[in-house]
Length: 315
Image (cartoon, rainbow, N blue to C red; front, side, top):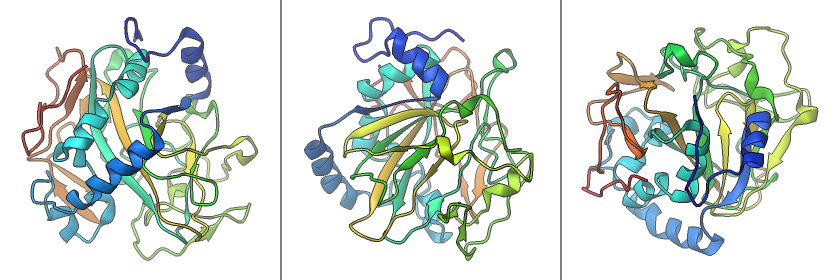
């Protein structure tokens, strides 16, 4: 896979690209000014309560599961549609993935006062919750896997309110077997790791996927991603990542993750529904979004506009 960012205003420099390849992440970097992000979210959050045009509609909400209902709101929100195509994001992503790129999923990640920290985890095919691969790279790129995630802070993200944590360089080796299937229990009781941090994974125990049952992440190497509203961090999903718990003081912490792959990757192969987190939603109205370049492969269903008619600005 040949990465390129030539001619793009926010492309990674050769030194930044080398750092990304070594550490598995880049940033934080500014996408919006803090007051711009705060104002935009204040305007948008009420509109997002209207799910009438969401691709999963009330189907996800009716399942009682908040994780799936947080998926893919870029497919009905004009602001989020523009966000996933933001040049400050796409230029950096194409520096790694090459010029022809799809956004295949977005997710909101709220963390409320008192919420536990998220388990250390990695994702390659995203079969981790369902047991069914959600993305598959072509055979000629066997050395690659996972997705580029760009996690944007919509609010302040601090150690105290649950910011992300990374273990640099851990993206080169998968410590989890995604062909196993985790057991979902929405009432699962918080556990404490050896450092005394309360951790969980949205009703799952990610340790069930460990290749080595005695594996322990080296948290002595962990770094915390403190971010202002409007800042973003780009990382491989195969990087060991987690989050701190929300200590209970102050408002909700909110992040928005957009996930990118080359157009050669198959998205939801031979799959008609998403089944995970105790819920099921149909992919009938779903489509991937071309954010840069061209799609000459034709593997995936594409959509060029939101359900409300807002056109995605391809870079």
